[in-house]
Length: 152
Figure 1: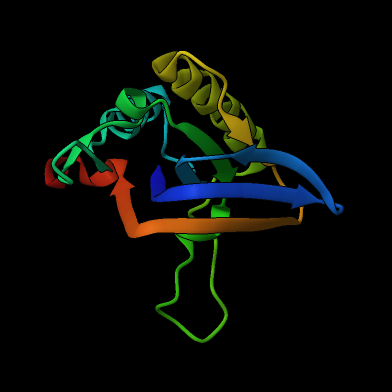
Figure 2: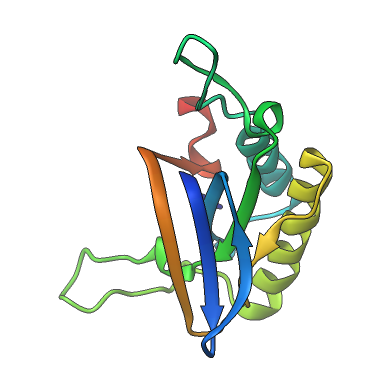
């Protein structure tokens, strides 16, 4: 699994010109799922996201987690995070999980993050043409990959 985590002042997701998910201060998480991913990857990544200390404390230092500041998460499935661009100019998405595997893991990630935060996580619509708006706060953007656990 690969996640792009952006600290935001606000973020929203539109599908067919309707808001389907929105948050105030917190994270916009773009989540890519590949065929090799499983529940252990999901649990590790959810715990890392929920514990990530990138919110300012009283001294202006990034010392607080999303849980500490009462922030929310907008979780968006994004298979393009596994684009392979080594050959040619058209990306290949062969590593991205097919919907029959990715959809359950996406829903499980939503449930796991909600449990970690103690409140519901907002989502987009898996497979839909989504329009994502955000105000990146900082900017702070962190990339995590479960296949790279030793570097996080």
